[in-house]
Length: 74
Image (cartoon, helix red, strand yellow):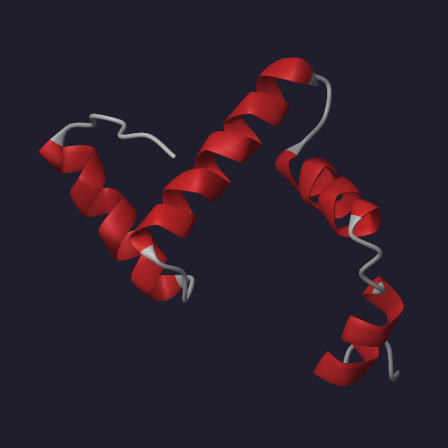
């Protein structure tokens, strides 16, 4: 683990986003870094496609989550 220097302004935005997303400040920064790296590696993919691929690689069942959240019951 290392230290990354960022501006106070960016740190504040990460802090605000982390509270909304129920993540620690470090977890929020790591998420944004990971998405940014994947976006650079796969510029043809949208944010939603990247997140869907991450969920799939973790074997998260979108169908189960949709059912639990009450989606798809029409």
